Image (cartoon, rainbow, N blue to C red; front, side, top):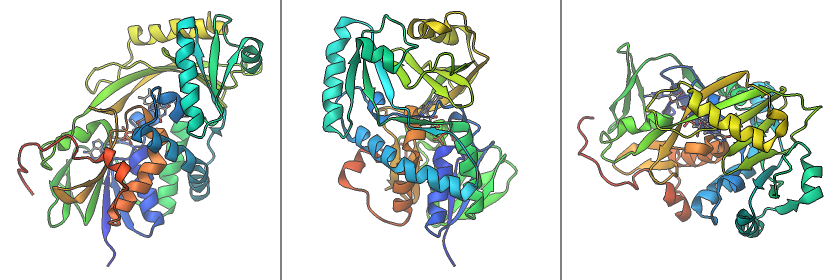
Length: 379
Ligand SMILES: Cc1cc2nc3c(=O)[nH]c(=O)nc-3n(C[C@H](O)[C@H](O)[C@H](O)COP(=O)(O)OP(=O)(O)OC[C@H]3O[C@@H](n4cnc5c(N)ncnc54)[C@H](O)[C@@H]3O)c2cc1C
């Protein structure tokens, strides 16, 4: 009989791993405490922006992000075909805007390294800038245009991923309540709040901001903590004021969506697992938005929400097999870039399940890199 792989967590990472594994002919059962896409993945702005998200010189994390961006065209097409769903995927490119003379040197050095890494980024100034993005405030001095970046409508994409999993034979179990890893040595056992036990041969942990719950249990430290992102959306008349690119600055971002909204994010605050929206968090965004796009001066967002980014101590995800628990593979801790990183994570996690080694540079994401924790208590 074929092995059965359990996937814990039904956000974009869990669904992507489940789809990739089932496409490789593996039996997969996905276990979710709540609703698939009900946490960070459904809250995200959906930007696929490895260059704008990596402000310093390129490193292993940038390489991972860029590889994932390159997988996106085929990956989203696969999800489209398997699900039969439609969703927005827009190759808009991005503008990283500078407002002060002092920031121009930084923009220049970013352009230089981006160009050595496959981008055709250029700096736009004056008429060129306002021709490319007429809605921008005239306070903008310059912007780095990175044409390779794109965005997706995350809530619809996650819904499509779930449908794609179902049509590819993944068994999805939702609303299971608290789930506990009860055994991981000879076989995998996950116990639901109801007492029901799910058994399997291997486990892929995709529990996002909750991944730290396994800290200690598997004999390693898993320093994952939730960073709340508060975000909002305006109703937007793109005919009147088109925003052709994703617009970034050091203070936030604006993304025009095909459904007639303008999404603006996002705060970064520590509030435990609280996903409520605060006046203070949103007010700061609104203030910034008016400075970037004057058409927003009188506008009020119609929707405000928040999600929990799964952040690790070094900001990099945890991807790979756990040496102390060989039936367990981690795919968690994707912080600000889980939507972008979902295809490459699915590929690497599926390789690990199949027993294929990671490449040397990918060891930067080893889940056991933060050291050993208290000894394993139970298996
Ligand atoms: C406001 C905001 C904007 C963002 N914008 C972007 C963006 O533009 N681009 C980008 O790439 N990323 C973005 N992100 C980050 C991105 O959303 C996350 O990195 C990504 O969603 C993480 O996916 P995940 O599947 O690991 O986590 P989640 O989506 O949180 O899924 C984890 C799932 O695990 C479940 N779970 C928890 N414990 C258990 C358990 N014991 N057993 C089973 N299931 C369990 C949870 O219920 C949840 O459904 C944004 C995040 C926020 C909050």
